Length: 86
Picture 1: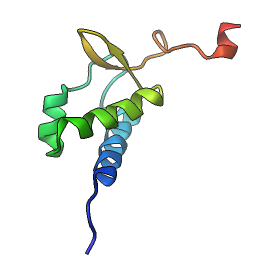
Picture 2 (picture 1 turned 90 degrees about the vertical axis):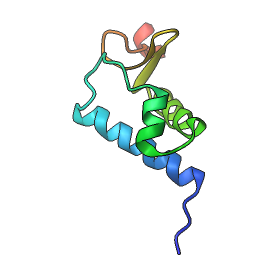
Picture 3 (picture 1 turned 180 degrees about the horizontal axis):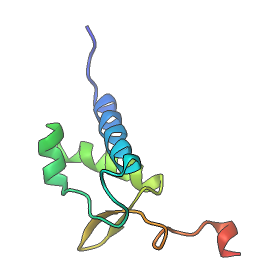
């Protein structure tokens, strides 16, 4: 019997969203679905969705705009690396 853990669920959501971003399902600059919509889609608690979104943000795939939501990173708004700033 395979047990489903919070870690496995979080990873599954992260991978699904990453695949959608890289495949172009979510175009650069567009807003991601709300946390509530993702919770309903994946049948998980909000903290699990937030953990997955945080991982995508750490990877630089999405950005948070306070008061607006989470958006797919595009080249124009992509944070510059230290070497690019120099």
